[in-house]
Length: 270
Image (cartoon, rainbow, N blue to C red; front, side):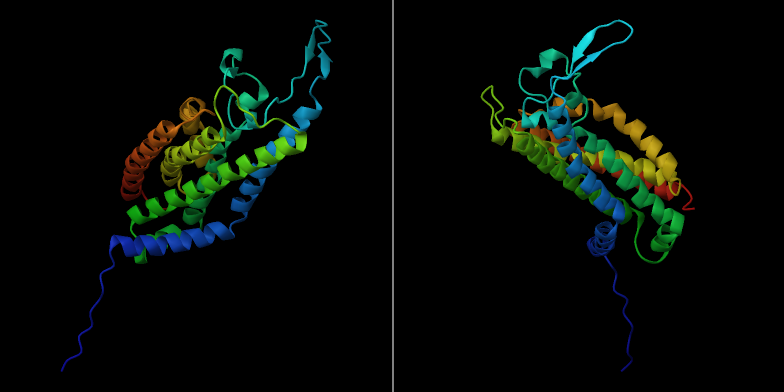
């Protein structure tokens, strides 16, 4: 009998699983990943403690002589979102501008560096030649970015709780809302992360080895939607907010993922 050599055809699921193993192994060994997580954890602690210490400090404008009083945080959850009733104040305080929503832009650093390193080292070209297709590559990079973003949001949330506890701030929300709404707010933000990661992935595969260009484009593209994050995922979020963010994240991930795949197919890999 003749021995026939049969080459097994690898399906999308098998190739994607292999790609995910490689990317998640690289992700958990990456210094950038742990630096971003540590920064997300420490930032709200330092900001809350420092702002609490400066509460009531009076500063005088030397030109006009006008006095201004520094106002510290009144509640632990101001690092997560605007408190009920705080919208009428204009939302221009430090915590309204610098809160957990910054993580949606910070994750661009990981995505851009992660992808640009593939093209700069020649790994991507070799990968597409002998191993994976471009669709699996896009899905894998997007999932790695989403997981990183979820870790960053969770770390910032934990840092906010620790900062509030250290500073002796209140954990009460008021207005009939409670900790369940805070958890829903965090979940809504996590489910919204695919929207931003998909944008950053598309820009990164277009910029390829040019990390600086990917970062500039990602920050610019992300800012177009950044101001809507607080409106979509308020501190008083409910299941409806979570479902809307999940649906929006899935649509953006699919649509922009297809666009990223097209960019890889239509452009040079070097």
